[in-house]
Length: 126
Image (cartoon, rainbow, N blue to C red):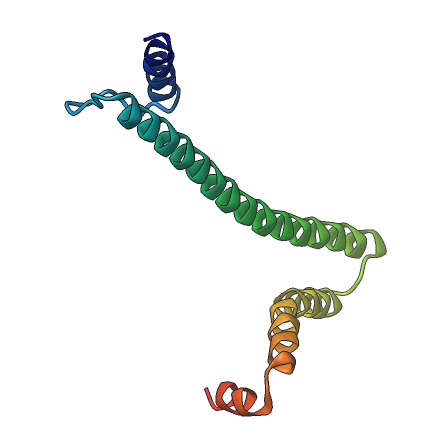
């Protein structure tokens, strides 16, 4: 009987912490409560993992973009300090923009080089 009270308490705690809610259908036996507790904890952990992974992707993308914009700002100040001609400034901007875009090309080439010759031929025809 004491174990049943503890399982009910654990069920209520996990249900409240995971903000799943109490719903209309409730577990009736101790085994059903155990199953629900484990299911809620696994679901909560999985949800947290997915949110963390998505956040990590966004953060990495933002960091790369922030670095690019910071570099372009530094370039602007550098060119202003040196009083470079407008044409040379435009060429430098274009060069660094192409360099920023070519990073993705370098990654693409790395993965293409890992492919077998047959798969590489199929990718190259796309």
